[in-house]
Length: 330
Image 1 (cartoon, one colour):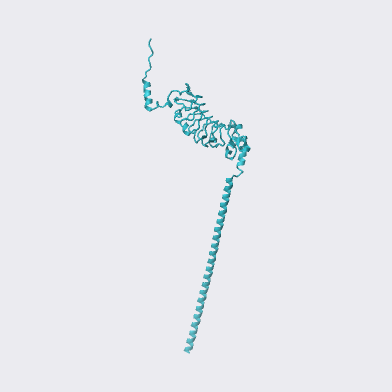
Image 2 (spheres, rainbow, N blue to C red):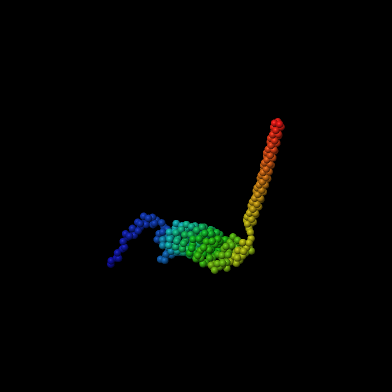
């Protein structure tokens, strides 16, 4: 019985030499194996849910398309490990102990379309955290009890985002500048947050009123403060806040008006004083000028009178001398 010829090992050796030369084979992150306590299938799905993991799994296949690491105790998503998975389109990190997400976390996940960060311990979402996720369609960040702040520009580069859920967090205000600019957004979850229904959150309330069809839980998105508005729906108080916030003046407004009034009063007083000084000086100048002209006229008149008197005396003297000469001749 003849055995089938064995395939040559030469190509495999060449591949190993090439990987060693490039340093790729030394990285456990990009090996072709499957992480411990995880299941990998032919559909490029890596399932690591509920395995009591405390760190991000290693030995992930490079071509992984879906990664599910939910229901573990993972505290960090290391960018160096995660960003090797450039073909990843689905990432479920829900129900872990993640405390922080940064822009570098998802720096190379250009194809990622679904991201779930629910049931973690996030406290703040920084600027451009999801900026690299150009293909992100659905983002869930629910049930983070300490999440109280989302940067106004967090979603400014997620142009294809369609579904965003930030329900059941600790949000009181939400700047909607970047959300309004999302052309594809069709569903937004806001319920379960202690929303402020005061002037600092007026834009959100008015937007909920105008775009109610986008909010999957609009009826459960209610005010948490102030006390007289607790339990009221955000959409119902939107127009009321629009009217209220633009009729009343705050303490800083009054201070501003008082300061402006003082400045105007001081400017008017100084201007009146300067004009008064100028008028007094002008009147003194005119008076002195008139007096000088009057003196000059009087001096001219005196000079003319003196000149006429001199001519008359000289004429009389000449006439007397002529008479004396006539008498002497006789």
